[in-house]
Length: 125
Image (cartoon, rainbow, N blue to C red; front, side, top):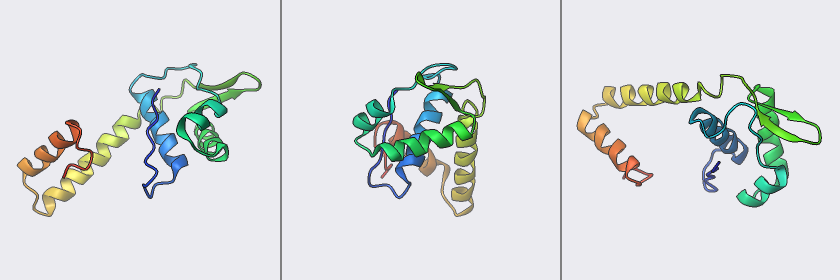
């Protein structure tokens, strides 16, 4: 599992962690009952405060996406909400494309932007 954090983003780090874990589940990188790395491992790997990580994982557990076993660790639950995360993302993308179209964006411009992003230009500039 690879968690990418944008330290310059306005999105709080704990929210970015939650999103990345949900994406890993929706892509099948994490499956039901897979164990997540320990808090210390993730904290060191991401160079973030352990309390930030605890908040993200606590919220994932509250949402039913993960569960913890005392002394064992944190595991991915069987809940389908994380697996449906991509569906939510596609709905969000659809809404953005509809808004762009309504504001006059051409189909070619939108397709070009998507192609740039997939080729590695994250900003799509």
